[in-house]
Image (cartoon, rainbow, N blue to C red; front, side):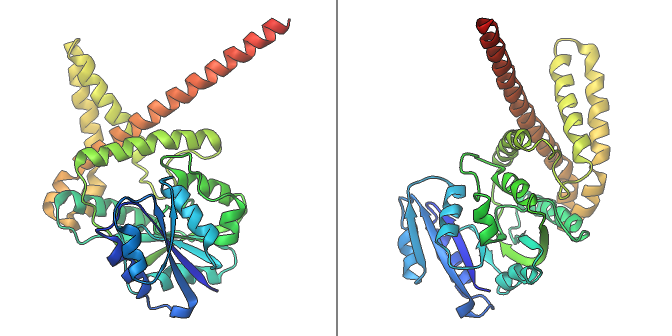
Length: 335
């Protein structure tokens, strides 16, 4: 097989050079793969830097990462298209590990893994969150969805289902996985297909991403009614943590007016804390401070995801109600 590595990038001049060089330096035979950079409307030197390394650069208006990945896949010559983000640096054998599962004809998509050497507390906590997810994925022969990066798809199957939906601002990878799952082929996890990425974000940005992800995931659930929950990569405790975090905050807010409700906040918070013990125990490998701080990260995650899901669900319910009322009005007018 021939492989196409597609790197969608916008204003990525600080990282695109190292990313492209690492992609070109893979252990896989050079004649077996190509590297394509899709310049998504950059206003900096992203495209020029990529061209200086001799790779194909495809410019397009700023349409977003999903559209850029689709553009790259359509232009690719490979039987398999492999997606890499511009802030990632793949390990030397990353590509070989990503494409190896496609020797099995029943495999249609492969998920790779992140690793980080960033030593900040939040970065170590986020990596511990990824590592916890990877441990669960390694235990199964298949997985239920593939993230946008690092990921690989059989190009024909990817294009046949329309690729990523660029109208989705988040969770477009879940939507694609739901559509691909109907082909009856398998998704697998390649734990050794590692790319390095610094998780250098603030708690505010982390919370904003989780809220946004929860909101758009609501739309995906509405499109695919049979798909619920966060998949086999999510911790089983998450389904409990989301309502407990919401009840804790609600009790505090209501308790500011009715003080008798304040003790409930303590009860809900204690119940939430008890669910974080397994993760905290595993997070100790990232440092004692990470283990101690992990309940805070998990609370932020649960509250943000829950809020996003609630906002998205309420919006969808409102739209459905309006549509029902409109249909009823049209029926009454015809009568």
